[in-house]
Amino acid sequence: MQTKIEFRKQQLKKLTSATLETKASGSKLAKKLFTTDIWQQAQTVGLTMAGDLEVPTEVISIQAKREGKKVFYPRTLPKRQMVFLPANTEKDFEMSKFGVLEPKYDAKKVQTDIDLLVVPGIAYALDSKIRLGFGGGYYDRYLKNFPGNTVSLVAPAMAYPTAQWPIDEFDVPLQNMITLTD
Image (tube, rainbow, N blue to C red):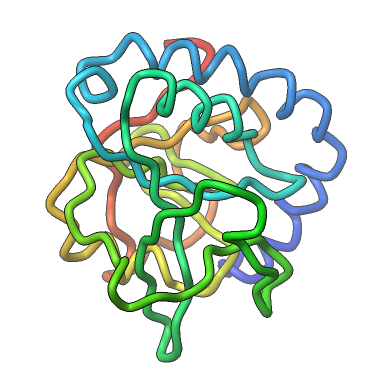
């Protein structure tokens, strides 16, 4: 079995080749999400601003706001910590050191009560519901004590019947995964 670093490198190449397929699957996966109980019951949603290799999240943000849900976005902090903050317009975001848009930090606006967290990743083991992210460990640290519901939208190029990478004690399983085939 490859190391996480080796598998991540290979998977990023695969996702680069599958960008159009991943983007095209985004709206179908989002529509499936919108029919779930966890979506319908959520009043607050945590969501990333998707990067080029990820399932698009803009349609989720738009639908959440249309339904009166509050949307919060992750902000990375020192020591691999992460918090969620509101951001309603483009000027509420800034570019992070990782090259992704994050909300500007304001300690008074940190949201700790999120009903549904849409968790990003680059690969997912469908049997164990373990995800592989970009390697920072931010989400696994956050999920360790997260009391709400978790879900990931899994594009075909991201889905694996079982993990092709080592799973360790810090990897936190997701509660829900949505694929095009389920």
